[in-house]
Length: 193
Image (cartoon, rainbow, N blue to C red; front, side, top):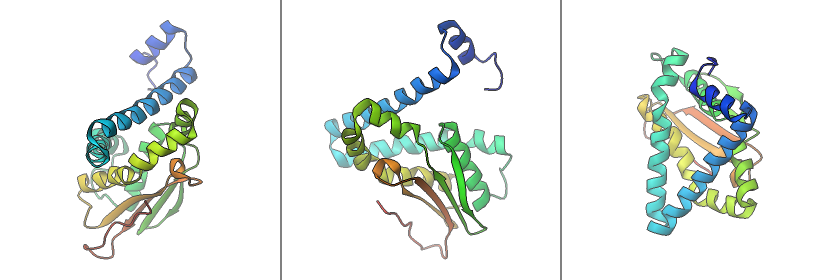
């Protein structure tokens, strides 16, 4: 987006919107679409089937940009905990969530998000009760699946597990992402959901 001639900038100039106004509108639209998508799936198919479909869509979103992110970071080879942490940071910051690495060694990466425009938009548009209800039904395991899809695509499933064990939209004070080296290949992925 550094190139000011990008079509998005041209469109914004023609509408008179600032980048900041467009960003707020984009986040609100994405959050609203996600909540309405979940509710529609649940109404049409029931919670179990809705969750399977919803998770698949988010897995596809996770993998849709992976090659681009790997190329941008120059980390195609020697994928490890630290490079996976870099990937996670890029993913979060690309959706306007500041990402802080709170712990990182060769065996673990923990990243935290303290401001989530997605969650703030959901509360503003739908009210906290409706927004939280939707997130409780669809968010928990879906978020862990998102990261697990990335780990599998990177060929690291036997070595590293991934989860998001805290989510602001589920009542936590932060969103927290954890990537941890497995002790053995049979180790299950822990989750607090």
